[in-house]
Length: 375
Image (tube, rainbow, N blue to C red; front, side, top):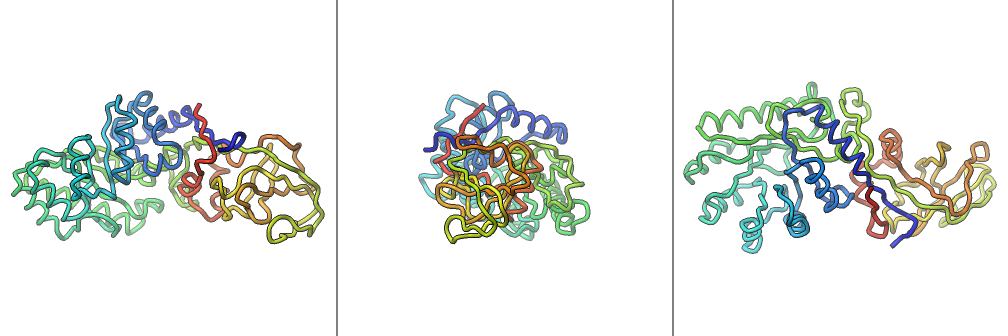
């Protein structure tokens, strides 16, 4: 466990992001995606605060294990949990958890659907169905919609709890990208098929973060924000002008300077004897790939008091080298705090672009060696 390297998470920033979200989707209910330990921010504190302070009552996970953890740790709170991918409803032990712990699987294949429709135990269980409208990952196939409807009617059901699909290209323009246009059209066809068959669809959703940012999919009852709640935009940089989003990064990654020394141009530093690009100073900071600050971050720029430095040489397991040119040296000494990223969405986006990595991977990469501090 680190003592001076810390992952700060701001509930105030989370609240501000939620307010900005609701300015976009005023009338929609929220399914807050908290898979992968709330995108690396700590799922238990994030969900507790979201329920108690923000009034969010629906959450999405990837696996049954994630959902069960929430039920066990937050037993005193009232909220719904949906498992979106690793459902395993056919396993007896998993089926019992769904039945007894108020956890709802998102059904995306015929085997799981048939299991629930043909099981007397699941006779009154909420039916949450996902269709594949063109992402080609998970989902019941569109050309089988009539068969699905027939099976639902034979089971005696007259309604389904939630109907959803997932967009493959919401980081691209919703109104111009052909893939997005087709997926929205396909979802309308599926909804109409259910309506024509006399099956009530109680809830619907199509919009993930990228769609919400563009004000799309808001005609459904629900939206499913994920990354945007933690701050970053989901849009590709070249389409940022289409985004309505102005969120702040809810976390800050901070460490401290272990050592600092002068270097000459070409002087080798660290593993591999990487030569320094010019004369200046190198600060050794107490974060490495053992903490989730990976070797992919070599060459990225970091800031200390608005002065730009650069990660040089190999990132080590326990530390990294940050170089500052002699013409732009910060006021820096051993023991000083050093921020890897702060709440600025612009600088965080710049960092991700340089590292050729998406924000999701940066967030979830922080290891347990770095303590999380909530404020």
